[in-house]
Length: 499
Image (cartoon, rainbow, N blue to C red; front, side, top):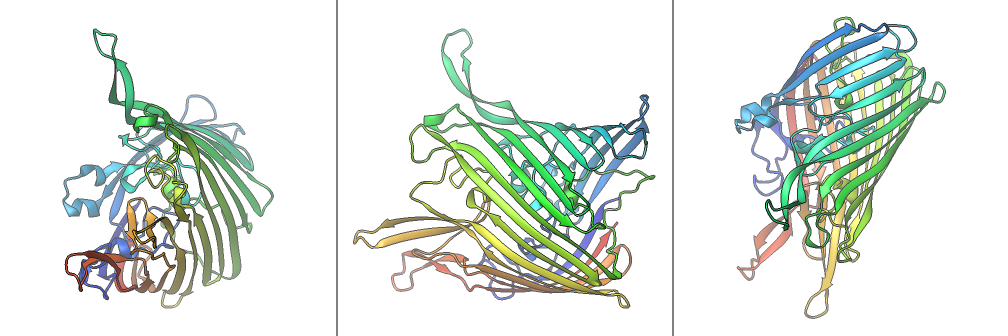
C-alpha cells in the first residue's frame, strides 16, 4: 500500500574533486545521494521522493459492542531497503515502527459514516507522527532521534503516547500525552548508609500536547496548538540536577478555495489498509482545463526553552526559538505554481539539541544571523505525451554564529560558523561572513503508467560558504582555512515506481 522504488543515476557535482567539498560527492554512479535534495524540495515530508522503502501495514477495523463505536488497529513496519543494502548491520535504521496505533471512534451524530465524534488514538511504540506545527519542515515535538528530530534529547528507545480528540461539524479539539525515557542525573542514597550519591539512570519524562482547528466559513481555516516537553536534567556542574524543558505554541491561518482540502503531511497521517475506504497515498495529479484552485497558508511557531545562562554562573534562562512560513499554491488548467518563504532563527534550527552550545544560551557577546529563504517553482503538464516540464529556484540566507576578539596588535578578529542544520556546520575563514546560497533545478518527467515515471534533471548550486583546510604555500607548516569554488553543477536520471 506504500512501496517506493527508485533507480537513480547521475552526479550531483561535476565541478569539484571528490573530497574537496562536503558532503562528499563521488564520481558519476548509480544510486541516490543526499545532495540531490535541494533545500526547497518536499518541504512537507521527511522524504525526498527517491527513497527505496516499503511499509507493512497489518490493519483491522471492526464495529464495537457499543452502538456507534468503531475500533481499529494497525501495525505499521517500515523497511528501508537502501539501509539494508548498505549492510551496516544497524537493524534499527533498516526496520522500525512507522506509527503503529490503536484507535476507537464513537459517532456522536448516530451516522456510522459520519465524521463527528470522540476518538481515542493510542501509539504503543512511538509518536513521531503526532507533532505540533503544520508544515513538516518546521514542525516540532517529534520523537525520531535518527534524523535529529526528537524533542527528547538523549532519548532511549521510542516515545509512546496517546491522543483524545473531539471532531465537530467544522471544528475539532485534541489533547495528547507522550512519555520518553531519558538518561539523566538522579540523587540516591547509598545502600546501608546515609550518604547521597549521583548516578545516571533512565527516568520518565513527559510531553503534553493540545490544540484544535476551526473552519471560519468556506474559505478560511484556523489551527492552534501548544505543548510542554520535559527534556531531562542538566549535568553541567553549576546547574546540575535542575530540570530542562521546552514549551511553545503554533498557529496556522489557511485561505483556500472551496475545492482545495486542508493540507496535511503524509508523515502525520495514520496508515490504514481498509478495503472499504482505500488509502490512496500516491494519487496521480488531476488536471481540469479551465479550472483554477488556490491556497495560501501562514504559519508561525514560538518556543521557550529552559537552558543554562551562559553569562551567569549557576543561572538558567528561557531562550526563545521562532519559525514562520508562508506558502502559496495555484493550479490553473495544466499549469501549477508555488511560492514559499520560511524563516527560522538559529535557536529554532537547533531546537532539538537545544542551542548552539548544547543546553546553554547564546552568549551575549556572540552575534547570530537567522535563516531565511525564498523559493518559487512551476511546472506544466502536456497531456498528449504525458510529460511534465518543471523549473524551481530558491535563495537562502543561512543561519550563522559569530564571535570576535582582537589579536596581539589590537586588530579585530572575527570567526563565523554557518549552521545549516543540527550537526551540519561550515567554519568560514577569519574575518569572513556568510553569503546567500542560490539553488535551481530544471526537470522533465514522463509518466509511463499510473505507478511508474521517469525523470531527467539538471541542478545548479552557488554556495560560497564551503571551506577546506590547506597548508600555507608560503610558509609550509601553518594550516589555513580557504574557500572552495562556490559553483556546483549536477545532473541525474531516475525511474520511480510508487504503489
